Image 1 (cartoon, rainbow, N blue to C red):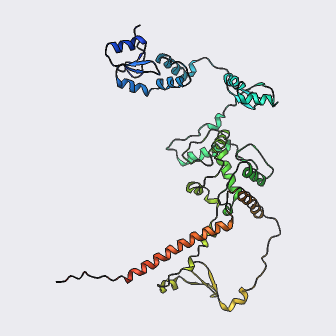
Image 2 (image 1 turned 135 degrees about the vertical axis):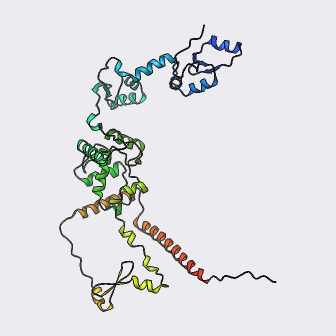
Length: 407
């Protein structure tokens, strides 16, 4: 049987032919080297053509068919299928897509074959035997994506700031923003923001880093909700990851990947820096305990006297009062408090409940342990700084000697 040369997209020099037993036998009898592909049943005239074939889509397509225990297809058939896939408009119009659901397992399927395979699965048979429901076919039309929402969602690289601002405003106007009472990770809605936070912490395991330093927790959660519902971005993935097409897809991604958490690294904390306040830690660093008094002139110039000349202000910001007013400083006056309930008290109560849940789950260390670790780190930094100052001062004690040579 003569070999039939097929159409190849690599040019006439490749010499790709459909391999038959006669061709293979002739290659061995004539002494001509046989460059073949077992997956595609093809024979080549040179090794370069064989290596080029291994990088083609036809070869990869037959490899997938081989894994599925299907026979290979010729290059002509593959070209027809590829052309039909790239030009779907030339085919007859297909009916509107339908979605089939199994009431027993509460799952949906896009084709009849997948639904038939599901009916034979072990999980479906178990659900059917325990009485969760009999197999019932429910056909519903597939939900179509909103074309207006995805329109102009991607801008050119040379877009101006005005174009970017207009695109953001149009997307915000068309997108549905989540309310503070709605969960970020599911469709549940609650009566208050506190109930929603307790749900996300207990059911989804949401962990807020450095919770005690969060200054605006509702604003932070609102920003994260807009990131998911408006921008369709994952909370944990970095900015280089392409956004998803819908809120359902990004929720499914976070659930499957375990990304129901806030990113706690330099990039993530820089994004949420406006919602934190670390002034208490930064101000209480104890730098005023170690003061280099060698340069007395510089130290005295750094001291500032208050306008009423009753207090001395140190470089660290602390104030030293006059001894003549010590009886006033010793007074312990009650602090006047507002009797009306404030949102700050509710905010602190919510943070306290969340901290208790984190401590019980082992997700956060007690405050005493954290303070001990912070103090140890500060002591080490101050010790290194002090050793460096002593070493610099000791350089002045170094005596330089010239090598004494006997003449």
